[in-house]
Amino acid sequence: MSSIEVIDLVKSFGPLTAVDKISFEVEDGEVFGFLGPNGAGKTTTINVLCTLMRPTAGRARVAGYDVTSQRNAVRQSIGLVFQDPSLDDQLTAYENLQFHAHVYDVPGRERAQRIEEVLRVVELWDRRDAVVRTFSGGMKRRLEIARGILHHPRVLFLDEPTLGLDPQTREHVWEYILEVQQAHHITIFMTTHYMDEAEHCGRIAIIDQGRIVALDTPDALKRMVGVDIVTVQTEDSEWAAREIRERYGLEPQRDDTRLRLEVEAGAEFIPRLVRDLGVAVRSVDLHRPTLDDVFLKLTGRAIREGEADPLAVMRLHGRLWRGGRR
Amino acid sequence: MTAAYAPTAGLPMRSWQAAARVNAGGVYIIWYRDVLRYWRDRARLVSSLGQPLLFLIVFGSGLTASLGAGLTKELGDVSYVRFLFPGIVAMAVLFTAVFSAISIVWDREFGFLREVLVAPISRAAVVLGKALGGSTVAMFQGAILLILAPILGVSLDPLLVLKLLGLMFLTALALTSMGILIAARLQSMEAFQMIMNFLIMPMFFLSGAFFPLRGLPAWMSVITRFDPVAYGVDPMRRLLLGADLAPGIRIASHHLGTVEDGLLLATFAFVMMVLAVWAFEAQE
Image (cartoon, rainbow over all chains, first blue to last red; front, side):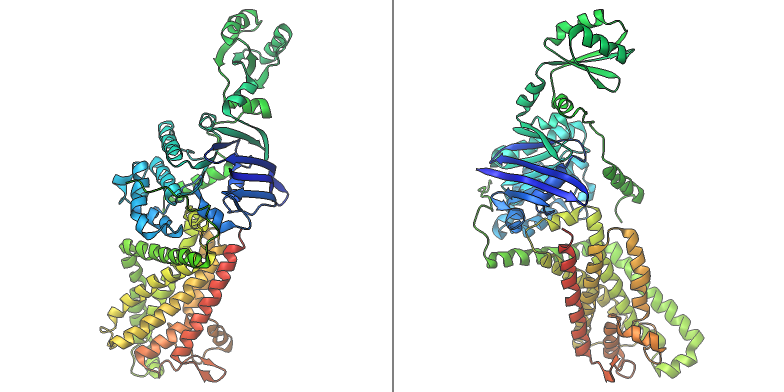
């Protein structure tokens, strides 16, 4: 049975089409990733699936319910971890979860037990009576994950769950997410623009400009690129590119001042390349294909990690400028 | 320790009883959150009493000193400070109610509003919970000022206090609901400043808190009839200081009684809440 079913979904804002007729299915218990640069339509898709926006055209079902005609049933069946924190930072961790338990109709006799359980999963039980304002970014995200599963949803939506967290905390947050997923057999639908994170997924849809350009397992996607990736930086990219084309019959991809080549056996290729090229080589890098490479291959553009969208930057500035709350 | 993990969904559509229960739970917890935050933020509680006191003491004493004779002619043997007292209670209610409602804009800014709006409860439950929460808090804020009554020589008895609390609650409900309607459409705190200057302050000044709504220029007299705060100030003054000073707002030669004032406030609140629900729904 599929947890999420999307058929020809379209969402436009005036003349702008954010999601352009996409279709996909997510199986029960799957970890499904939506990967793409900012503005590709990831968050819009999530907003439609979790009933925060109505689709312009097409149909979508989540946990068996239609997102337009059975909104409350959808809402009851899903958990959400948003891109930006959505906690009340003047309440304690426990009070935030209490609030959630009430609006999601968690039976009164189970409330205390479930709250304790989820707080222990994300290791915040000891901090339950601390006001959320005192929490670090990572703790807040963990609390949101705990909140997202408190009402036992069938599908958990994670919109950039680790955005803005340091690498170590990101790793930690992922451990919690996967632990929860395995223990409860929840379907996870996540968006990210971190390539390494996408590899936690069972399947990945790569989305660009509102369209799905590829949908497969991380391994299969990587096989599309297939071989080793050699990145070379030279004194004269123009010259080097022509020479590579002529000498090896390869089509190098330009990425800023670097050239990327897909070659069979990279380790043996590099010495030859350095010897044969008529220009000075500044640096050479060899790696196994990543989803980054897949994205580049499919769209001709790289996903820049850590590049924030203008809106997020504005929000951040606003927050800094006001110097916190009230 | 581990509770059985039973997905709540996948069941047939909920019965109306179940839906009613979720929504009741939603109203309750949204109300509770407002009360809890008010209670926790005692600094705000104390500081927000400063302004009414300032008005009462400085404004009251200042005007009495300069206009003493004229005031006696208008107010009889009631001192201006006593006259001002019900108006200042209404002021505390007005500002607390509006600020409570406007916290929705903060919730929007800081993301919490999404947690509320994506929950499986109706928009009506959200609006009602918020309105009741803001009203409870505002009623408390007004009630605290009643402590001053004995000092000002106004005698209170339990029944009177109960009536006053009822009026404060209804005034607060009307104003919180209006605030929610505004907040539902307001996208920034900057816009809120405009609302304060061009709506809330005039509502306060025209409510009869400072001066009796008698013998006013015709245009002003008409505007005061549309000021919901006036329908809270007048009956409170009547209960505290007697009908001579507050004979009731006159509509088509009929002087409104206390019960009629209450009904008007409740109706206004209801209309505002309905509009607020609609405003939230229109945003999707």
